[in-house]
Length: 109
Image (tube, rainbow, N blue to C red; front, side, top):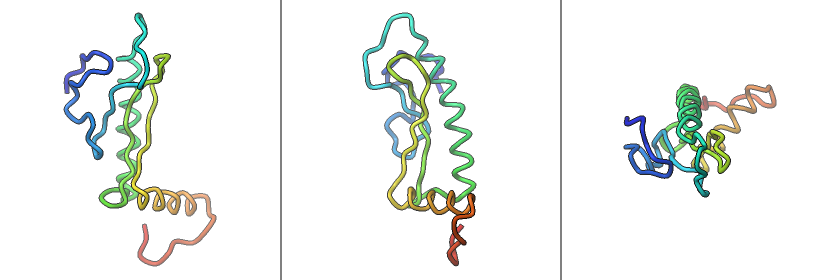
C-alpha cells in the first residue's frame, strides 16, 4: 500500500470496500498543518489488530464485523467499527459470554 496520500484521497486500494481494512477521511474540512496521515496510520495499526481479533471469533462472512481507520476533523485517529446486523448480534453474544451474562447457545462460537 502507498503510505503517502493526501487526506481524503483515493490512493488506498481497499478504500470504500465494505470488507476492506481501511477508510481514508474524516468527513470534514482538512486543516493545514494537521498530521492526518500520522493519525490515520496509528488508527490503521489498531484497526488491523482489532480485525485479527474479530476474525478469531469467527466474525466474518454474513457475521462480518470490521474495523476501519479514519481521522476526526481535528486530526485525531479514529477506528470505525462496522457490522452487518447479524455480525453485530454475534458480537453481542460473544461479549455477553465473555462477561458471563449467559451461556453459549449450542452450535455458536
